[in-house]
Structure formats: C-alpha cells, structure tokens
Image (cartoon, rainbow, N blue to C red):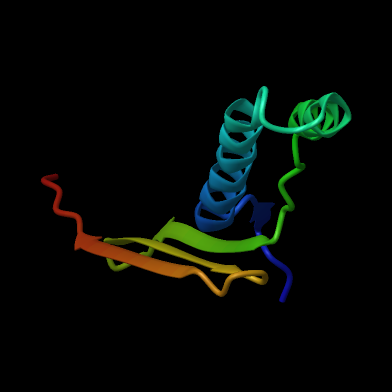
Length: 97
C-alpha cells in the first residue's frame, strides 16, 4: 500500500530549526572572540539553510458508509525520528425524510 502523502515531520523540523538557531547564537557570540576567518566561516554556515526531508508518511481515509456512518482515519509515521500520530473519528448521521 502506498502512502497518501509524504510530508515534513514537525518534530524533525523543530530539531532543524533549533540547530539553526544554535548556530546563529554561536556565530553572534563568537564575534570579536575568534579570528576573522573563523567568524566569516560561521557567517557562511549560517547562510546555508538546511532542507527538510519529506520523511513523514501520511495515510488517511474518510467516507460515508451506506449505514450512515461518517468516518475519518489519519495516521502518520516519520522514518527518521519515529514520530507517529493516529486520529480516528466516527459519527452516525441522522436525517429526517
């Protein structure tokens, strides 16, 4: 069975953002404390923004059965950090003729 979608994992994205912010802090704190070439190297590293991988597999279904049951099923799993989430919802619809 193939995935409905491949997305960016929110946990992995947060880790990438934190690492990027840490590098920026390191660059700012090193100003005047390291050699100019070391500082410029940090500046160049800060300019390179990491790409986020589409490693979050998303599978979902939704529908309405002939019995009147409406359902939503969502499940995701990250191949990198093992993050996962599941959501299920069901309701029996009522109607008047």
